Length: 340
Ligand SMILES: C[S@@+](CC[C@H](N)C(=O)[O-])C[C@H]1O[C@@H](n2cnc3c(N)ncnc32)[C@H](O)[C@@H]1O
Image (cartoon, rainbow, N blue to C red; front, side):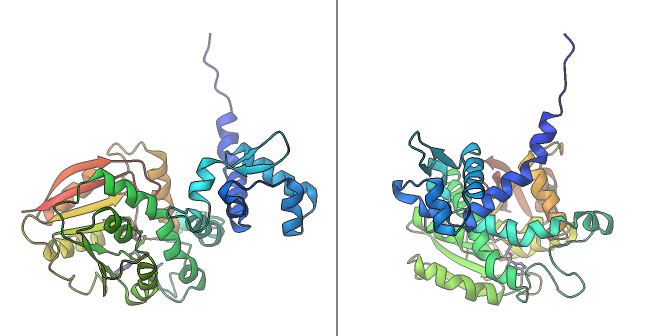
C-alpha cells in the first residue's frame, strides 16, 4: 500500500500557539498553585474565583486536561497531574513558571516580528538602536522577569548536571554569567564541600544575591561583578561553568569568551559548557534547533554544535572531552574541556 502522508502533524504544529497560551494563561492565573497539595476544584469554583463566565473557564480547564496539565475526575473536579504539581506550583524548587512568563511576556510579542529578524539578521526582542544587548537593565519586562525566568529554566537542568558529572574533585567553581543563581544553588546543595563564585553584570549580581541568601547559601556562593568582554575573570577556581552563555553571542565573541575563561583556569582546570547542542549534522534535535532559532529573535548568536565548540576550545588551549548528554529543559548536555 502506498504510504500516505497527512497534514495532521502540521495541525499539531499550528496548534502549538493554542497550547502554549493555555499553559501561559493558566500559569498567570496561578491555577496549578491553587490546586497544589491535593486540592481539587470544579470549573464553577475556578470561574467564581476569577470572575469568569462558565464557558471560558471550562474551555481553559478542558484544554489543560487534554494537554496533561490537569486531571478531571468523575465527580467533575480538576486536580494537578504529577508534572503540574512538581513544576507549575509557585515556590517549589523546580518551578518552571518563571520561564513560561519570560516566553509569554518577552518573547511571544517579538515572534509577531520574526520576519524582521529573518530579513534584517538582527534580534527583535529588544531595540538594537537603543540598547547594547538583551541584558540591558533599562527594559522593565526583562528586568522584572528575565533572571527569575532563567532560574526557573535552569533549576532542573542544574539538578541533572549535578547528577551527570561528579563534582567531588571540584572545590571552587566559577559560574560565568551565572545570574539567576540556579546552578550555584543546586550544585552547592548536592555537593556540600563546593564553593561557587557567580560572575555577572553588577545589576544582575545585586538582583541574584537575595535569592542566594534566601536559599541559605550566601556563605558558599560569592559574587564578582564584571563584564566578561572587558574584565579579567577572578582567579582561584578549578572549574568554570558557562551555562547558556555562548549561544547568546556571535562566533568571534564566543571565541573571546572561551579565551577569557581559559586564562582564568589553572593547568588541568575544567571548562564546562552546558547548553542545548545542535547535532553536528545539524538535523536536530528539535528543542536545540528551536532554541537556536530563538537566538535569532533574542541575540546575535545561535546554538552551536559540539564540533564547533571543540575546535574553538582547542584554539583557546583546552582539550575537549566530549558531551555528557542529559535531557534538561535548559540544556541537553555538558561539554567538558581540560586546560593543558
Ligand atoms: C541566558 S543567561 C544565562 C544565566 C545562567 N548561566 C543560567 O544558565 O541560568 C545569560 C547571562 O549572561 C549574563 N551576561 C550577559 N552579558 C554579560 C557580560 N558582558 N558580562 C557578564 N555577564 C554577562 C547575563 O546577565 C545573564 O545572567
